[in-house]
Amino acid sequence: MKLIPLSAIDLFKIREVLEDSSNYLRSNNLPNAEDFTNQIFLEEVPGTPKFYTLEIKGEVIGFTKISDQFPLPGFLHIRLLVIKEKHCAKKNGTELVKNLKKISKSTLWVDITKEELSLPFWQKIGFKEEAGRWVLN
Image (cartoon, rainbow, N blue to C red; front, side, top):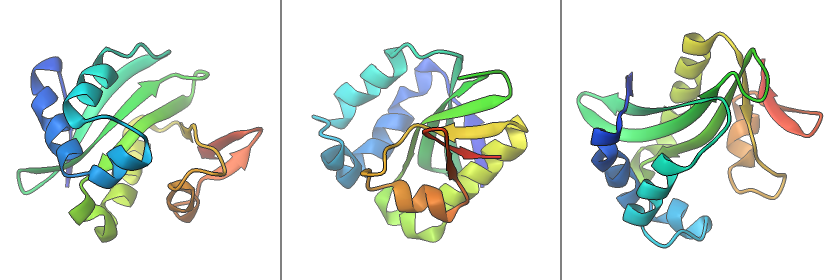
């Protein structure tokens, strides 16, 4: 499993993951993979935004958008984490988060609410609520 940095020229990789993630698009009320891909790449977020794909044996199975040094120095904000549906049950999201933790050596932060469907995933891998934020130290 590898985390590979992405640039604007690699947007097709994100679109490919989203096209195989219809539940993610539907649960987040997103119109389609192409529009959302363009939107998330152009979206301005605080910190230093970066994209990575998650690849196994040359196949892109997921991606993440992060912002380093946000909301404070020493934090890494996980803005998005999407894994192709057929790869979700294989603990690939967990491995991606572990790799981010190794790379950043920072406190990981994800901005979710208690009502979000993904909350059990974040809790299972060790995120705790602290002052209204979900963090992994």
